[in-house]
Image (cartoon, rainbow, N blue to C red; front, side, top):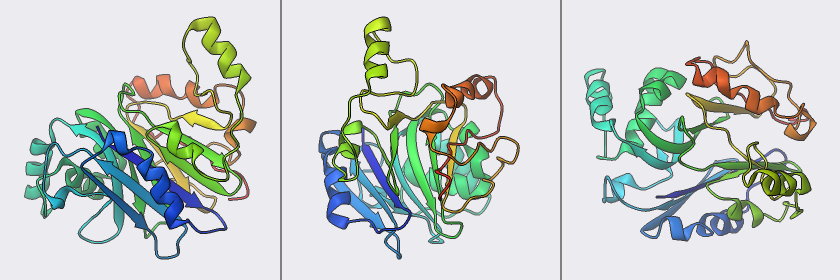
Length: 264
C-alpha cells in the first residue's frame, strides 16, 4: 500500500509546503519513503508515500521520471505480470534502471500509450504527467481496488488516494454533501461518484480507466469520439460519468474522459 497525491494549478503555482502536507497526510499508507516533484513552471506537483515491496532500493523511489525525462509517475498498487511485460519491453529496446513495477508502467506507457492498461494484470491507481504535451493522465484498475479521489476548487485540480490530503488544501471548502449522506443512509453505501464532502469525487474504475486532463481545451489522446463538454462535473447531468463505466467494462478501448472547467 502506497499513497499518491497531485495538484495542477491553472493560474497560480503549487505551494511546495502545501504539497508536502498533502503527501504526508498519507504517511500511514507509505512509511518507508516520501518524495515530491514540481514542474519547472511550478503549476504541477506530484507526491508519493512509499511502502517498499517489489524493489526496496532507491531505484524504486517516486515520483519517478522516465529515461527521456518526458513522463513523471506517481503510483499506488501492484502489477502482478510486470516481469512478463518488462521482458517484452526489453525486447523492444526499453532500458530499465530499477527492478520496480513502477518503471515498467512508465516504459509501457511510452511504448503503447493508453493501450498499455489492457496489458496490466493487477490493482493500481496512478498518475502520469506528460511534460511535453502538458497533460495529466489518471488510471485506476478495473474493479477499483485501489482508491482514487479528485476535486476541482477555484483554479486548482487535486487528486489523492484518500480524501484527507485534498482537505488539507486551503482552496477546499469543507462542506457536507447532504445528497451523499441521504444516499448512504438509504442504501448503506455510496453507489455514485459522490463522497461526504461536496466537490470531492471518487474516480471511477473501468477497463481501462483513463482520464485526460488537458491544460488547454482540446481533444485528448484517442478520445475524439467521447470528449465530454469541458465543464465542471457539478454542471453535468446526474451520473453522466458513471454511465460511461458499463461501456468500459464491456471491453471498449476508449478512455474515460473527465472534463475540466470551461475556463481551462
